Length: 216
Image (cartoon, rainbow, N blue to C red; front, side):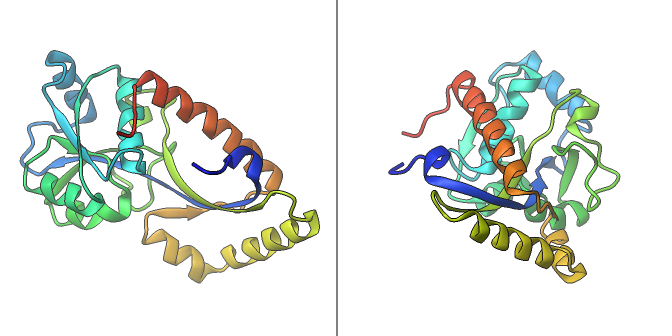
């Protein structure tokens, strides 16, 4: 990239975050996450998953899961999350890790079976679906969206944007709109967001290196 996100931006606030959900087709033989993991362990490389493209949230969420489960599965990149979910519904792939908003209609209609959500806690949109951490203790994975400003932006400007954003996020209407998209509001301070991004960079650098992920 023609910029260094660690040096060229200053953190303002993490606006929202959302978990992904590990789903399989409705007629899949796998009823639980443990069964999916066991099948992958029994036949390394024999299963596959679809995702929205190299480096996308859904790709990295799946690779993070594979790393934690210590299993090898073939990945199938698509040009977007929609086509990946559509092929999963059609039984063309074994599983996927789409964002909740992209999968919940198919889950509720019985076209997909949800095995686990990637958040630290169960998702309120899918309260009966266990977390990955209930099978793989300590696991959590979120996609998130935040606000940053150019490096050198005056602190008073950064804090005004932060305060205004938090005020907007405090409205029940805003929280409701994000809820239907499978996300929850965050609104942390610039200092907290800076620390969070530093942790995220280190974590994903490790995943990308250990999983040998590259853009070709």
